[in-house]
Length: 99
Image (tube, rainbow, N blue to C red):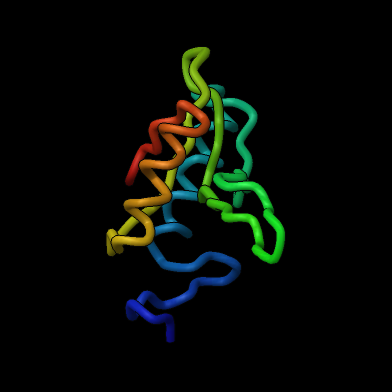
């Protein structure tokens, strides 16, 4: 069981993420979105002497109506996640879509 009681479903961290992956796959198959990727890694703070880099892994990234969307399925918005979400906007100019 995960730290926040989400039950893994196959390769996905939660049932919510698994359902969303299926929805996005259908949307891609009928042409509503394109370029669907899963578990996309972004660097937020580079590696420094004696320290590891800080990264954020988005659940999904795809293109919809010519706009690149970075999406995360969230049930529990931890302070750690909120900080990384804010860093995504500041460092990469990407506003994460929460579903």
